[in-house]
Image (cartoon, rainbow, N blue to C red; front, side, top):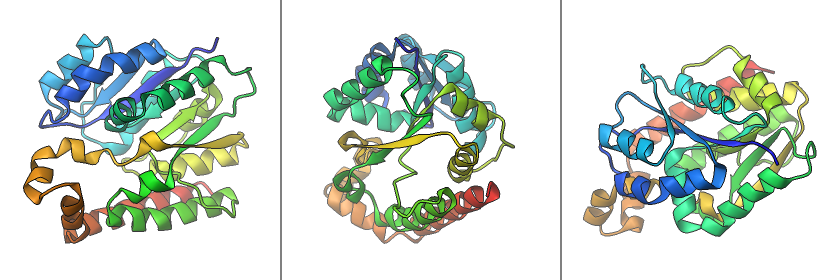
Length: 261
């Protein structure tokens, strides 16, 4: 049986997902046997303690540096999963476990019992069309551009969801990622795909319903004040700051993808 760990990153200054962590973090740990999370230095202490209580390996990054935090999660996860790791943003992993537990459990079992070395070196876990459509327009429209550029660097005619925040990496893929010159921004999500393609490592794609929009759970008070998720999403869709932020992120991802061509 393969030895694969769950590796996550997490940023939660308000402790917004404390209740979810207390309910589901332990279940996620049971699925994998080992789980590691790299938290930003701003993450609230009670959240960190709850993760430790659930038997997670918790690492606190000294600097709030996005690219370095993601890279650290891969490096820390590699210590516990000799055959690879499943990286998922923690908030997304908690939502997946809460909303589509059987789907997640079936996927994890497949990773553990697959006929090795038949498993590809990296798997892009894509959001379903329904799940993707739940997200805010600034994310959807700017990721559309970034995903198209990534597809170009991979030589793919079909554009996939390369930015879902959920990916499997083999030990070979991890070695490629950790051998790259580090970046400080989300451009790593373009850089890593291009580098893995250049290394000629086989990849695969799988689609999951559980990767739907998880963000509202972190802002329940704002959702309630807006009159529900649909109204809150409308507010985000008309927020100039959100659009500027997402445009900037897309620019970084495009730069990262083209840096390895």
